[in-house]
Length: 271
Image (cartoon, rainbow, N blue to C red; front, side, top):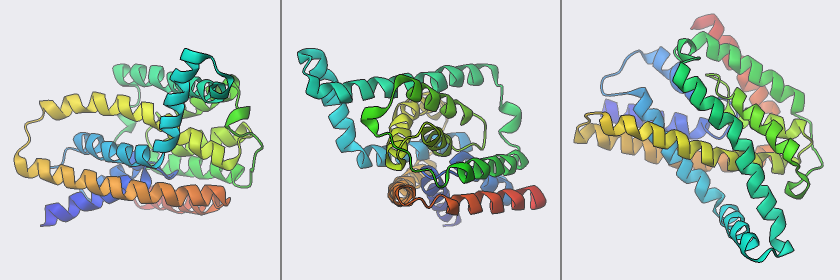
């Protein structure tokens, strides 16, 4: 029963922190530091499985836009009809914006560049303070660009902001939304572009992570616990994404500034 509660709580942590700009991986590390080692939990496998739950939730939320982009992309290739061109171009921008993080992610993983930071909870405290600072800078931005006005340069710059999220403890959604707002995106445009960028990155990391999952020798009871954690990650990612979208739309990023500063300071003092 205790293990079940722990896995449910870990699914909740992943789910609620994945969409908001506070770093889900950083919060899992904070939990690990607070409770110490727990039998039956491989945090690498847990991250893969719960991330898959988050991925399904975000695909569900954005399903209409995803289908529209895919449909327009192939219809433009086939017909060259101008009514499909805007979505066709936007689809390419998502692809181009994903490339920098994809390339750097492979390099970082291969060389183990950040391995020494992955279990350093103090560093998570520092990155939360950095995240809070950048969120403070853009908290009142409204922007003027919608998806039709985004340029290739804008997309690539937001893609470079996503590269920053490879640093342990840096939020992917936070860094890309900050990047979008610095490029004068409307709040909702920055939010949507950020989460559409999440999808190809999540597919790649999940596929890589599932290799370790298949290599692991898990018993049926442990598999069930991981699946329960994934379900809760799905539920709370869905709830958290909807909630976060509302806050971004209404210019309420200041809440996350307070959270990042308070939690970051507490980590540096007590952990």
